[in-house]
Length: 266
Figure 1 (tube, rainbow, N blue to C red):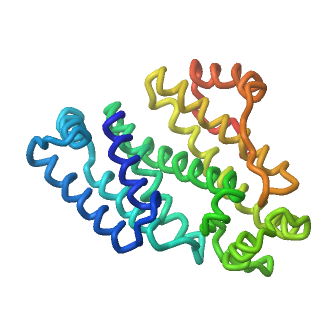
Figure 2 (cartoon, rainbow, N blue to C red):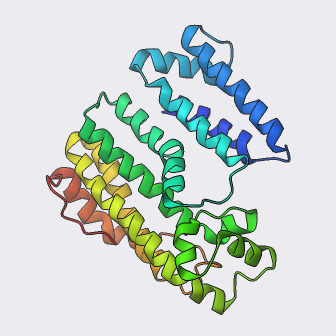
């Protein structure tokens, strides 16, 4: 897990940290991918790829999922808004779902049902992060609310980015205007997250406990985002009181995983 994280963390930093332009970032990601290809064939004298190559061979990791992460990171260098839900789902399928598939591979879980459930969890978590971080992403020039949702409410991604550039994200009017869009976005993430509960019976206890906690925390986060009066200017977060509230339910789902979906979307 540490090797996978180190690979992805560095690639993510290449994609959107620092002052390099898009062309330079893409060249750096290409070089990173070359090292990935080489580490499958030979032992490299580079700490991350030395560890990653060893993990790939020991656990038969699906290398294509590592390549899929790099597709998403390349998108980050130039794509800062999305025309449709389909475009956004494509991004999530490459930025988030590979992590879940790699974790399943580490635990020798490969059933199509488990992979599908893992994908819904990872996509949902990516979406929740986007809706949680509107106040962070918009000032950085990124809008993950797709135009297909915004235009139905007479808005656009460019309009939101213009609000951020003009310092207008604290406008009561703008925050009221975004609420119908955000409601649909939260429902989309909540539906996908709920489908992920089907994964729990497939997991060993420790991982099941972790994923149960993740699922319930995700649903609680959806609730808290939905309660924000100023979602363009505020960032919801979980506190110790939220975890105390969720603790018993998380433990019960880990001890007796639901065979069918018992928890409704937030």
